[in-house]
Length: 356
Image (cartoon, rainbow, N blue to C red; front, side, top):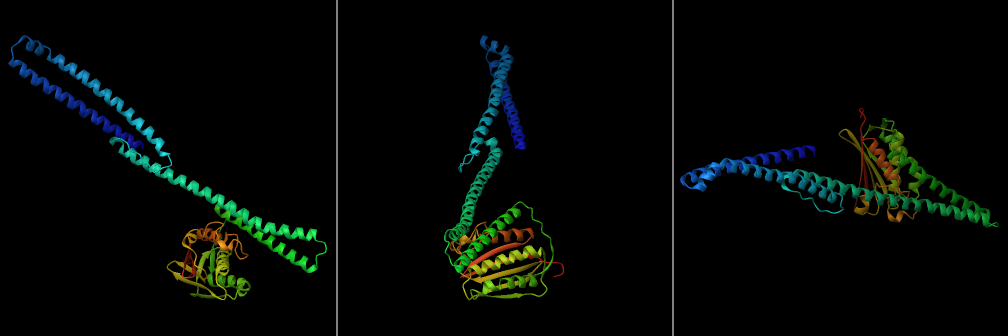
């Protein structure tokens, strides 16, 4: 902006110099022409004018220069008023562009860029506020649901004194299950907050992908067998990545849990891993309802879940995929998702170890 102001000042001085020069040349030319014409006429008036022609020219220059300087003195103030008025438009929440005088075109361009940045920032603030409100709403829902169940069953245990032992054990088991669900939610909230505040340390080391994925699959076998689902792993030999094994296990655990939650019963979940350049690519593929594109675009957002999952026992807190994305970003990798023809595919890319 400072350079632009300097450029405008130079142009104004140049125009002033050219205008004064032109004004002086025109006046001098008129004086010479008058001198030539008046010599042709031998009259008292022409003789009087000829004798005072230099004075007339001096008066012409004085008043002309005063007028020109006054005009150019007012011009910067006019430009200043234009810029001041334009600054009010900058912060208006509309798409009106700023239009300034021709010498201020560069300033006009920069002010329009500033206005665009302001509009984008205002939009980002609104979106952040909306997301915050949604987060509070989802959080209140996810905490209230298990909490209401716990209070309900504990109240029954407290009020109904002739309850059978089997009923008491059932209600205690349900209350305990909901308490554990609530604890998981709170732990995930703390975890995602730590990732956002950059307080998580990643202890990178060579990680055998096959061993890690096999361990995750073994841990999930009971949950998968309940729906008749199976897993099939297919990968290249000796795939070793650089990463934190505990945190990568969390990523693959979340992806497998997501696949198990939203896949059709009695279907196979495929896990594929292969080398691509200096990276390893890990794919989780399952068969289930196609995810709508608008849902797919925000699938890694906090508290995002398919609508039907929010009231089901299979749906988590909606933080698993968000945590997975944060972990992969910390490893310098990438995670993407596709869904079409009743097939959901998550693709994870991670840097390979030098040994691979």
